[in-house]
Structure formats: structure tokens, C-alpha cells
Length: 589
Image (cartoon, rainbow, N blue to C red; front, side, top):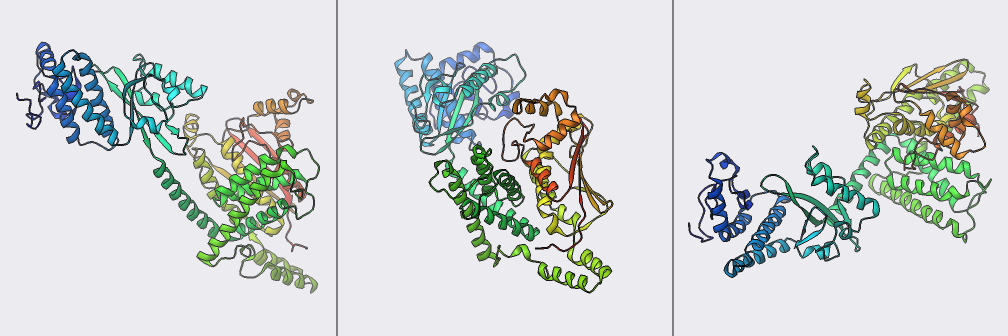
């Protein structure tokens, strides 16, 4: 057959050796053929070997032709080109003594290298030891900031000791054929991103290069600059988060107004314009506001409040505190966070005003009538001795449905469950609905965010774990409420894993050495959890881990003369019972 590269080869045959796939195996040039020809009659091994050895220059040219004609996904095109480069390198190594053949291969090599470099991606070949072979694209030097030949992949990617150990383990496993794990299952543990010193984000993709018998020969690493795509995605996510915030704001405008009011009060405190504050109470308030920010998907504000909690931790032993000392270097971080929160609040205020004409400083009081007017009329009824009528008025006009107020946490629970890869059903309300004057209970009801976050983070199992225990994949949180002798009893329960009292006992032992916690039973440990800042989490996250949340709820319960009890059964769930005075009266200011 002629060696003219322009001549179209017979359908399904190698232009050099006429072998049909998958028979041309010595050099995998035939990987570019239609796999429908795989069932064509076989050719003898000796003949096949002779074809490949005697006609490799045409095979090399056909590789180039095939690359140009290749119809493959964009992410596979560079991979096939890098594979073709590896084939040409193998041919060049075998025939380097023949000048004519060497010249033909050198020409083919230069052509394919130009093609690879023109794409702007970085390609390199790694052997089983993780060393970069001489075959690599010039773009590697710019994208990975190093000339990679002969260097370990851990050095090229500047991996820390832990990442280096993971990479070495992955390389050892991926070249080992004695296990059932696939190449991609193993390589998902190695770094997928390289952060360039210029701020660029480089995506790392690993592809297998296999011998004809299926054994892994080399690993092809493809480096791609995805900085622009990542920034576009972040921008899209920010817009989506803003729309979700607007949706939640409209769903509960009064609660949002309360959140903004409390944020502004916090900013006043952080500016040192108020009196000295009790730092423990302030941190609880910040912790609650962080949860509220999460409800409205104000992620930047939630993160800033989380950072503020961390910044104030070193001062927690002080009985009182003031932010008026602007020269205190220890407070520099707190001032920076304060300014970030102020900028976010200002932006949100301007955005809502320009877009919707909404004044966020007034929406908390928005109801058909100003609450002060409603309460004033109640006082008039009391002065006239219309007690029965006044009670009906308070219950049916001033009071709000407790069930409706708590129903908004459905959105919070769904969002938190999604973040932790868990599932939760809408809240199941049992018993009767209770009308309440929300102003008496607002701080307590708002602190319930901590109960729900703890439930999702600590108590609820992942769907597969729940199914393994015979439970439904989605957890159920129930809220019961009833009046008992002028007391309002609210019960929050879940069907999760229960509280790990053994872990809590260990945490208490580490934090409070002067008490023998092993002498306290599990119920006593549960009670201690409420009064000591401990968490069963090993690490602090944006959502939990400081042990402040439950303490905040307990403090709010005690502030209105109530009690909180918790009970838990391993594997069955946790019940929190809150007993508080039932107040159906107008707030006195």
C-alpha cells in the first residue's frame, strides 16, 4: 500500500499494515479506528508483528491524520494527542539507529508537539514512580511554574507532606493489578487543583495510558487554566444566592427586619459607641445572628460573624469589655470584620431600596397595623374593665400562630441538610397550635436555629446509614406545643442517632480537669452539655463545634423563667422539652 498520507486508507484498516482493530496491537495507532470493525477475522500474530515493524513510518503519519480527523469530546482530544505523542516516542526509541526512519519520526514528533503546545494545555507523562518523562508540553512550564522533566509529581505540584503521602499511595495502588478499584476511583484522592502564584486556578486531570494487554503503562496529566470559568461560576452562584436571599426575605419580612436591627446594634457595640458589654452574652448574640444570616442565605455576613466569634475567643475570660480602644492591636481583626459587615448591610440596604423601594429599617414593624397601636388598644380595654373582650382581642388580633412562626425553619433545615449531604422531611407539628405574643418570645424562638443546626449536624445520620438501620432515608423532626397550667411546653424531637454521651464525657474531661466526669451518668452528662461549652464535634465549622449554641438556648429559656430538659436514646433520637411561662399580655416598655 502506498505511503501517501493523503490517500484514504481502506475502511477499518491501518494505512500501514492493513490490520483491522483490535489486531494492530504492537503500536496502538489503530485506537483511532471505528470499533465496529472489532469482530473482523483475525490475522496471525507473526504477520501482525511483521506489518507493524516494517511499516511504522506510515503508522506514525496515520496517527497524525487520525488526530486531525478525530471526533471526540473536547476533554478527550488533548488526551488522544498526548497518547499519540507517547506512541511516536516509543517508535523513535526503537528505530533511532535508522537515519531515514529517525528523520520521519522526528518530523512527526515536531508536528504533534506543535499541535499540543498550540492548545495551551499542559501535558506530561508520569511513570509508576511518579517521575515526569521527557514527553511534556511547553505549557507545563507556565501553568505549573516548573520544568518538569525527571521531577517527582509531588515536587511539581508542591504538595505538602500529607498530600505527598496520598499521591505516593495512589501511584502504588493504581499500578497494582491485584485489587478491584478502578483507575479513576483511586485517582479521585489526589490533588485536582494547582493554585498558581499569580492567582490562577489550574485544573489537573489524570488519564490512564494502557498497554495492549490492558496493563497501565503511564499516567497522562493534563493541566488546564480554568480561572475564568471558576470566576464566572462564582459570579453565577453569587447571583443565585442573592435571588434565594430575596425569596426568603419576602417569605418572612418581619424576621429579616429583626435580623437587620440586631446587626446594626452589634455594629454600634463594635464601634465602641455603647457601654461595656458582657462578652459571653455578646458571643451568644453573635452566634444566634450567624444562624439568622444563614436562614436568609447571607453567606458573607454569616462567615464574617463566624470569624468575629473566633477573634473574640481570647477575651472570653474578661467579665466586661469595651470596643472603644481603637489603638488596641488585639482588636484590629474585630474592627476589620465590623467594617466588612457594615459594607454588606449597606449594600443590602441600597440594593433592596433601589430594586424594590424597600426600607429594611422599617420592615420589622410592618403588619397591617403598627404593633404599638394594637397594644395601646389592649390597654384601653383593660382600663375599661373589658377583660374577657381584651383576652379575645389579644388572642385573635395581637397574637401570632406559634406553628406559623416556627414553620419558617423548614427552609433552614432543608438548606442545612443539603450542606451536610443529609435528608430531612418538613417539620411535623403535633398537638394544638398556640397563639403567642411573639415579642415576648422572639429571642428564644430565634435561638432555635442552634437546636436545628445541632440536630442536622450531630443527630441526623446520612441517608445510607439510616437505611442500614432500617430507617427512612429522610429524618423527621417533630414539634409539639401545649398549654399546661399557664405554662407553654414546646417539645422538639428527632429520630436520629441520639447524643454520643461517651464522646461528650471525654470532651468534658479534657476541658474541665477538676471534675470526675466518669462518676456522672448519661443523663447528668446531657444536663452538663447544656451548662458547659462543649461540643461532640472535633473541629469548629461555620455551623457548629464551639459548644455555644445550646448554651445560648438555655440562657434564653432562663431569661423568661423557663427550664430546658434533654433526653436521648442511642439510635432512636433526641427530645428537647422547653417549659416556659405562657404570657398573653401586651409587652411593657
